[in-house]
Length: 113
Length: 114
Image (cartoon, rainbow over all chains, first blue to last red; front, side):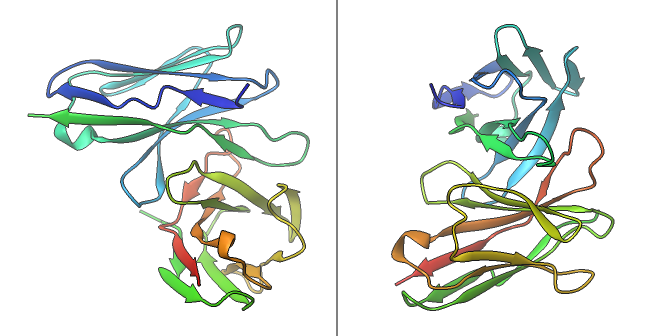
């Protein structure tokens, strides 16, 4: 089983649509979880951290289910500028690693007019 | 807004040559990292660094790789004898250690080994 697994997509949605991405992780000891976005040939940019109780930042909502080892990201009212690859990222470091991030392959989102 | 910077943006080198990739982390951050991304593949962890020593490294980070914080601002990755398969985008990241060790990435150095 891959450490972090995502549906690669692509997801093609019209502006204004709601889209959801899912991710599963294999290491039950993982402590922290993130969603990053990556534009073509650019660096990953932190979109949001994912808290156990779920959290929202504007049009973005992240959920974590530790029992199922499942993370989700919901984007409401999609904008053209949301077109990017969305990376599910898990801190799989142990002990004194101070943050070893393991990345999923990414889910490609294209928002069209 | 503070950001991580990296130089050069693109480095071309011949197989067997040594390269040094440079990074300036965000100024009040204490934790530093290197990742790489081979074209079309996922981002992979190489090494984490704290308090002037390596805290964790991956299997990729073999004896050909080394990291250093030569002064109070720079963080470097050295590849001693480059191979064709080292061609990738190398990202530096830093973290304050607060908020789940959130990491902020630099724009990357594209390394091409010929």
